[in-house]
Picture 1 (tube, rainbow, N blue to C red):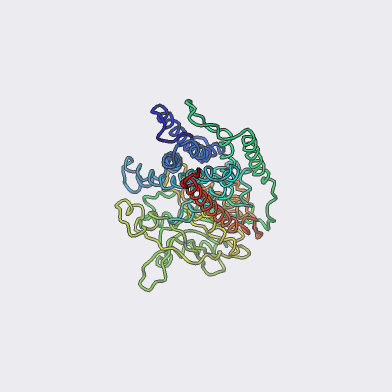
Picture 2 (tube, one colour):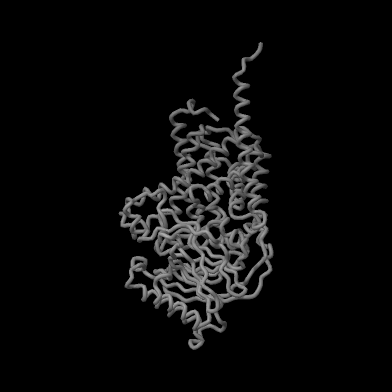
Length: 543
């Protein structure tokens, strides 16, 4: 490969055009492979790691590699997360034009992980044997995915594996290795193909990167990896227990009116009316009784502790129809000074004391303001509520049901969902309010992320949202019951109780740590090799 300072002007121009083309190809591959407003084609998501690997191989310097890869990852992540602008405009009163920097800032932050992958993979290729460097693409991708999930409160929204939820048979390996490791496996296959067919500039600036033997091995490796992933679709599910019927109620309450005191009674009446269609035998709606009703996040826009009148109506309804109610409503903390509020999931059961779960992983700038940052539009979005994280994560119990609670985007964090199952949950519920994002791709992306958690833990998940998409998801990530968007609905479907544990639940943390240690060790090894080679080159030659 030519050195940067030896490139001619036409060569530099051709290189820039190639880098930008690869960045756009990888970015829009990620967008079209992930759930989007047009048409989703999951395999296109593999263009993203393939382009990042190709960029790392053709750029003449690490600096140019970093910027080209960052552009690629920023384009892809920003395009997938375009819907971040909707709540800022619709509820924060920010002009559309001014929402663009926020979307690009979030996309640019997530793009750093893609840029790091490209630069580190380049270092491995320069300093390590070919197949060692290629193999390290997998743990390196996994390590960066895990960093994205845990650093700065975490935001693991965009992942390669989740794109394949649209084709569930390609996502079943997550029950063994989890979403992050499966993403690394997909990345390995894509990088292998990229290495087998490197991009050639028209001016032939760069020599052939792989030999004929390496070419064949790369293609064979990619084929074996993809076949192994698909073979996991034949893995039998965990043994299942009895069938339970859950009623999902989607109120479709206008977010701008939701917290107005004059609409509290109307909101409660709508949910009780829709629920009665599912539980009142006189209406003859269902052949089987409902085991519990699930309402969305903050479905009840009042404090149960202080609003005795509306709370009494909820208790009366639960007792009259002998059905447990699980729903979201804000909760007050036990602090002596009366400060602090929780985003709470309540359960009112006819013959048991009330139980609750408080959301642990809050949305920054949506449910609390980090570091006391004050921005005018945040007052509209927070609507007077500044939540604090909960502590307890025990399941809600009624009879033989042990219900693991997940509020809103808690369902995107694999470790948190694993904890619910470790605590004994034999069924999972996710209550959310995606009304903030309008008719965008966000509700579908959120549904797919939740489905990935079902595969990882081998549990059914019931999902109730304010405006959609309410659903029942099987342990294979298949949506067997799916509601509409922006429509009041009362749905009912069957789920099965499960007490077994998936392979991923048992070995997931060990896999993650092994990938992190391997990536760090490879990075240190490549640095030491680089220094050793530098020292050798600087030693005087003896005659």
